[in-house]
View 1 (cartoon, helix red, strand yellow):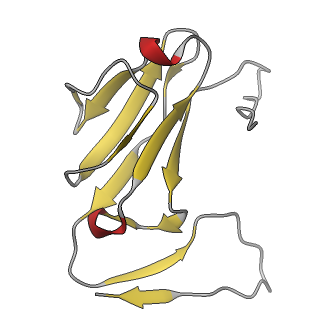
View 2 (cartoon, rainbow, N blue to C red):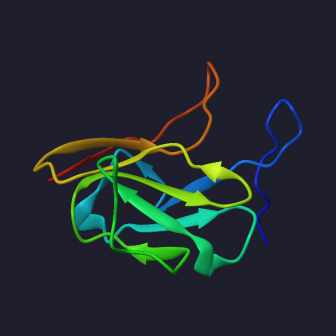
Length: 110
């Protein structure tokens, strides 16, 4: 099981996980968004491009349209944004924290 990270104040926050874990995320990669936070998965509210969205009542789904997504869980609030692109050519990096000197694999995809 994965745990939500703690904020500086010690309270849990809502997290939006993007799979596969490459940035930027692209629509043609069959992207799955998963909302993690307090409360039941059925209490999840989804937003697309800043507007409340039809996809509600589930904590995950496969993205069918490009845009900027967020989710909300009653106990932990609104997640950070996740942007899903539909570009023809994209240079991707692994979605993980990088430190100076790390070896990084890039993907150039079209």
